[in-house]
Length: 244
Image (cartoon, rainbow, N blue to C red; front, side, top):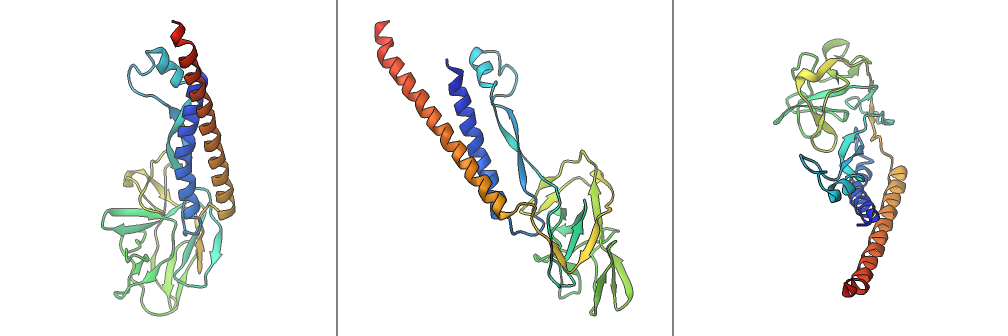
């Protein structure tokens, strides 16, 4: 069979999968701390014996998307003037205590709860370097570049900013947070904490829109290619098979 059919099929499958990734990136272009997803490829078939047949070998000559991985490049810092908004410049994550366990995020849009704890917009405690919730008394809050928090000149704690080993597998949990095994924590991060600012997504709306249009056009091209092959096969079946 013509390998061009397989090329068109896997191309269309890959572009349709990529559309989901690109659309999600674009939808979160204004989400603080969001990390865009990047696609990676694999063979169409997998498992023992997947390439034993001629068809299997032909199909596996063309890759499809195997999934996506987060892009951890830096997002743009945006000044907000809110003393409890914190942004990270450099590699690292804030630690959160959630109902599902510890989670890690770049979104520093924090606030003070009624109980006086530093929490996320969802009310989840932000953890200090000892892994404990941070209580913030009333008063003028100052956060140093290393994460040390002081109120009215008195140090009350230090917000945890952690990093992971280079080969650590971080699993996305929600829009802008990640789950990971604590054993993969490598060391305290060297990232600088900026008070009164938030880090934006590392996907901008203009680039995301252009990418979405490109992938849509690629998918349309693959659909047209499949139509050509389908028409060609129908013609062959109608003209050649009756002669057999």
